[in-house]
Image (tube, rainbow, N blue to C red; front, side, top):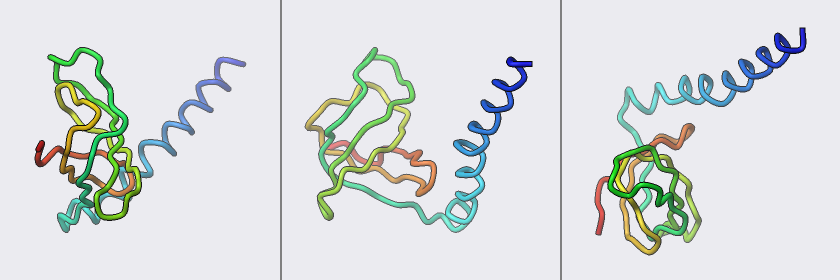
Length: 100
């Protein structure tokens, strides 16, 4: 009984965290309207730098000076690198467009 409760809570949290943002992305994907951030990396995942993997990074936007966190698939990224990333507004999944 407790296990069923845990599973139900997990499924609800997964739905809220994954499915709802994914559905909200449909208009952006269909119209190809992505958000863009260009700036300096402030937070990074440096595990296994030689391997391409999913990494969450923080970038301080050059225009707004706000820190934006996005999830990208890449090899090692380091603090201080200057990146340009296009990303989806709700899920914050993105692609590195430029590494300066």
